[in-house]
Structure formats: C-alpha cells, structure tokens
Image (cartoon, rainbow, N blue to C red; front, side, top):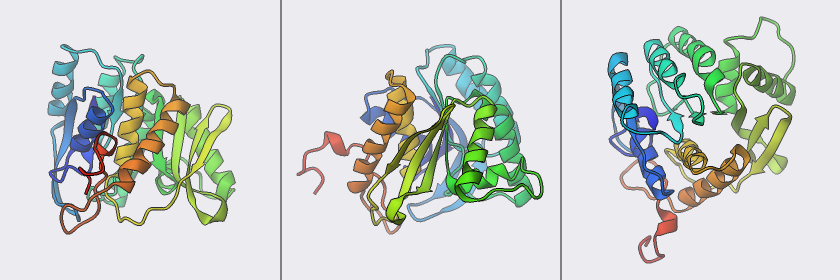
Length: 270
C-alpha cells in the first residue's frame, strides 16, 4: 500500500508507485494524500485531501486485504501525518518504507515545513523499517532537533544525525546523494551497527523526474516479496539505475524513468 500524491504526469506519487510495484510482480494499492496539477516539467498547484478521507481510503482497503508492506510518500499537513501514523500503528509487522519528501511538490513556508518535519520525525520515523531521504533533506530535518551551536560538520554531522533517527526506533536509514571517491554521488545505508553499504552509481545525464520515487517504490516491492533490507536496497538501486538508463522524455519536461524496461525487448524501447 502506498500513501502519496496523485501525479497526472505519472512521474511521481502513487501512479508511479503502482507502476513500479506491477513491474516487480506486486499488487499495488494507493491511498491519495493530494491531487497535483502539473506536467513533466513542473507542478502548478496542489489540493490536499482531507485527513479523514485519507484515513477512510486506507481503512476500507485494510479491512478487506492483507498488506505485505507499506510505503509512505508525500504527506502534506500535520493532520495527515497523525492519521497515517495511527493507521500504521495497527500493522507493526509489515515493513514500512518512509520516503516523505518530494521536490516536485510546492514547498510550504519555513514554519510549516519545520512543523511538518517535526511531526514526521515524532510520529512516523519511530515506526519505519527504513527511512529514505537525501543528504540535504536529512540536514533540514536535523534542524528540528539540533541545539544552537551544535558542533560537528561533514561526515561527523551526518553520522550524528543518522544516529539520532535510529535512536527514535527507525531500523535503517538510507541517505541518498552522499559523497563518494572521485566526487561521485552515492547512497549510504545505515543500521544499528553503522554503515552497512555505500554504493556509488554512474552519473546519468537526465534531467530526471521520479528517480527517488522509483527507488523507494522498488524497495517496498522487494521487501514485500521477502527480501531483507540490505538485499532490497541493493536490488532496488540496480532496478532504479536501469529505469533511469532507459528513461524517456514524453513531453517538453524531464525524463521519466522507464519502470518496465526489464520486461521489454530492445525493439520495444526504440
């Protein structure tokens, strides 16, 4: 089950999640948190879904079906965070992949953004099997708990911030966009014992929309199929790189990952 925004371009949000789930042999179910107006270049506007409607969408499905895993994507306000957290608390045995930040959504004011990040940290992070966020997003979230004058910088600060999130109850943290040798970017997986994996990937030109969404959806699918977190991270990264390598530009905006690339023949992708 995926909680997230409905993107008419199909590049991010629940439509993109359902595509990745299907491509990876999982049945996906969607709970919509917001309606976007946008294309493959940018989002013009967003309409929040009432928190009660968010909760009702999930509850009705959950009374009918058993979930193998949950993904929480974009949540747009404090009331939605509380509603989703309450629902997920009833299903502690199912893996939860938390990927709550999206650069595609209109950005709230600084005060609203801080309140939203604080609520996510307090209510959803403790329930997460894996929290996925970029190094920039991690820094912004950390500002909600750091005291003025907190020391440390670079890798030391990143490690300290991750340890804070793990101490809240989150089992694993995947930080994307970390530095690697030669100036390349990498994804770093942290657990209770520190760094579990640090994977650098070949840079692809892009520009892309929905790369992170593809990664977190693939993580959810592989964990729903029984993979443990390190296995799921490795497989999801490989799948995402393939989806980006075969991405297509459908309009005048950015390239959209081809989530079905591994099911198509070379002739289909021409």
